[in-house]
Length: 466
Image (cartoon, rainbow, N blue to C red; front, side):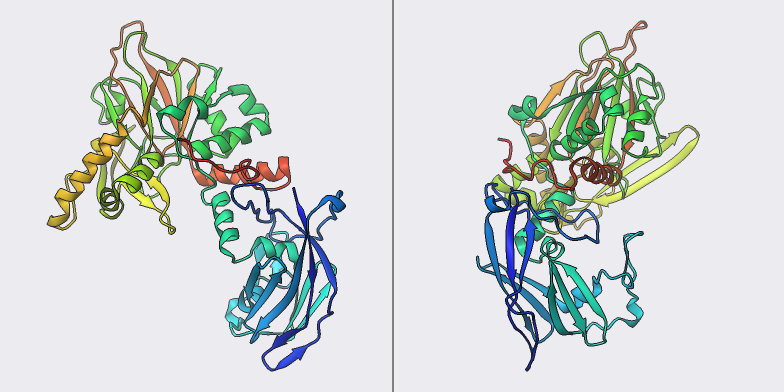
């Protein structure tokens, strides 16, 4: 539920000068801080320029919080203080850089147009005024800027707002899981609903972003159906194996996936700098005999477990770079792909970002100091053990007309070996979509269907699967 806050502006001091404010003017604005959730759910503005904020319908039922002052520190920092003790500070240089006036920001292109060749990073405000729900600043170069108060609060530099915005956008909220959780988190969607319903498409994409895996059922049994799904998201990702690739036994192949043997747990294309994010496998023909089961493990869950229980192993896996390599030929195209990265890569906050792992595509070149080799192999063995630990991994056999969709930079996947028969040749079609494209589609659909771009998880506490 939205809360209404009342802003009361007091006199602000700029160095030794006191500039006039419209003292005690009350400004009403709404914010989306949830008082019931386990964390504060804060959404960013759907567009970079936001108009006046609508007055809540049930205002008398809303909680009222006072913002009791706006003050300045030597002109370099403006602070909005609330009666609840919150402090929202905004550097003057940031405020001027993000002026939303037509001279500084193009609302049609949604682009900043401030020319930094002539920008003064020491710029300071000389006047502060308040009108309606707008904060107005006059700068020492004579330029005037207006800021919607909601717009400012959604861009607060406070830690909780920054972290929550990052959770929703980079790369959106993710929840790790183990074997015991799998049946609870795996959702199945109808192929035609994905193609015809934006609401279903959004739910499907959010589910993949959150848990890393989903199924699509009732898919027509033709080889080109993944392209139809990819087109609903944005567009397909082409790799050295083409836009669609056939996963079936191919004599003389240079790719282990195109054999009928066991396929060890791996991520696809770890030898790429920019890796395909979403992997899709459409089952056209499944083996009638034993084998052919898919295997998946959430590397995020394994990484969190190692970080908690074996921090020295985790440290090695996140700090030791490994060479990943793929040499071969596909459809007349010869390739030699090579990339160097640790098995586990963290983001700037030290949280899990992605995994790169493929025993079959790990190069014999290992360009690390000699004293790091054995510790890495020991850590690699511990990681592999957890990948195949029954508490972490699941097996299931895709049915014909099903599409398995999963996060290629988070989930590791493999396959049990099988034996083809003349009348029954296992045949899957694979394809990729980039996460950049999928995230863009999620934000567009959220704005279209919900009027905002917050996650469907933002109104309730996010609980890790156990």
